[in-house]
Amino acid sequence: MSVQVEIPGMGESVSEVILLEWLKGDGERVEQDEPLCVLETDKANVDLPSPAGGTLKHLQPIDTTLAIGAVVAEIEETEESAAPVPASQPEPVLSPAVRRLVEEHELEPAAIEGTGKDGRLTKKDVLAHIEALPAPEPTQPPSVPEPTPPPPAPAAPIKPPPAPAGPDPIRREPMSRLRQRIAEHLVAAQHNAAMLTTFNEIDMSGVMQLRAKYKERFAQVHGASLGLMSFFSRAAVLALGEFPSINAQIDGTHIVYHDFVNLGIAVSTQRGLVVPVLHHAEQMSIAQLESHIKRLALSARDNKLAMAELSGGTFTITNGGIFGSLLSTPILNAPQSGILGMHAIQERPVAVEGQVAIRQMMYVALSYDHRLVDGQQSVSFLVRIKELLEDPARLMLEV
Image (cartoon, rainbow, N blue to C red; front, side, top):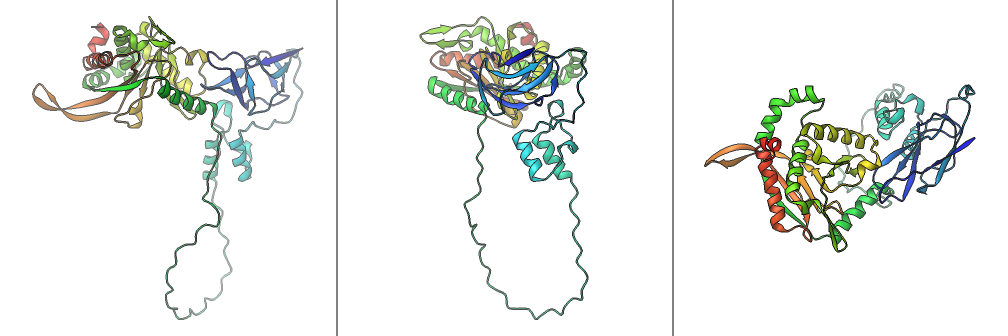
């Protein structure tokens, strides 16, 4: 009996996918729920699990664009007791970039240790293997008597190097669907919203002292390190409760208010920026926020995010400070009306009660849709964030 493998629904706004990579070879036996292939969507790359156990038959080649519901493969179900026929070791499934490197350098894929999912080879694995190869020993020419050197010739004038015969080398590579979607969203956000940014600075000394004092105990109790993002997440949740328009969105001639906070946390991956969502963050403690943020960040970088974890955000936080950014104007994650930008912490001299003191300072930015959010609301929102973080006890007491 054959079971068809269809492209499942991928959540809101996803109507088609690209078959990026087969994880199992044509004719290979697979088990139920075993990943068959990698699908690239405009939000993330996801594995497609097998709906049954049996023999896999490919129906679509890689790099094919498929609509939701399309049949990508068939599984020929077999008896559990039937022993598989011994066969030669199937060739490893290689991405186009990896296959090109292997062929150019005449390498044996089986001799390279893969660090990708299920031991698959990545481009980084092949490059590391090439660098580790011993350099060929130079051939020693036969020894001959050195001729008597001729008298030195007069120095010739130095000529500029000749220009290359052909055009300057360039490379053209297709944009991934994720990168295309990011580009579309960024341009649309600027075209469709009256986007404005307001700034403030926060003395992070209190938060940093709190982290230093309790980080070891926190890790022992909750199994997660105490990061900055959980403090900002909790502060944002409390501030959004006071300024609901920043947690709302425009839908035609209506304003949609959310009596909950689905908090998007921007995560940078090798494929581009993704924004997994903490659903109902208003119900989470700092420890719960920290645990879920860590889980989502790891899932994003390992291509294991579920589509539900990429949808439904009402407000976003992005942290350019991890890359050293001191100040920036983040772009809205449409259709949201606000995004909070964190930046690098720097020790700077500031005035404290009439005295100059060295404090750990961070600039913060709030980009917002001025059609819905007034300037007074945006400024007051950042001031509230500042108050909560400069006296972190307020995060616990919610005052």
